[in-house]
Length: 210
Image (cartoon, rainbow, N blue to C red):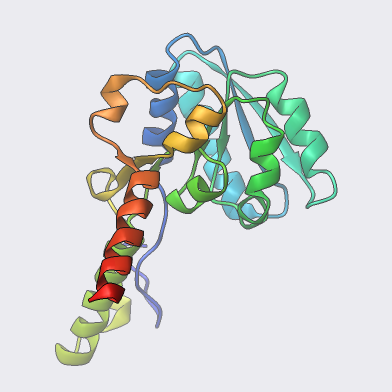
């Protein structure tokens, strides 16, 4: 990442796994077991899962890892995991993202900490997410440097978003549906995506009227 050396550079949406896991400890101080659920064939998900497991142990909790092969065993495996843990971490995983509604419906009302904010719209409860708009701007800045300043891709480090640049978000509707109460320390600094969506709809509606 620091020295690409060839013809490809840009940005990565590598998410702040360790900081995400810390949110579980903040939200559920008495949690003892934290589940990690991902799809076996998605190597990127396994990398995140390994980071998450290490951080869970560091915080004095026990990681319980469960995987699925695809859609056929997803429901049974998430049910099995949810019956044995206090919270569940879902990394950025294409299969899980496509089936997040099923995961949420079969998670036994456990806290679902997810890898990015898109998963909040389909059942997740809480995330510290990469800001994809600002990540896109970072990518554009690199392109501008190559086009206008004659910089070479092999000389430009791949950029990621720092923890400070990520956004803390939650879904009040999903939390309420599962009787999950987030602590005030999180609510004070997090954005409620349900209120955010409502505000966006209102803006669009009034723009249409005008």
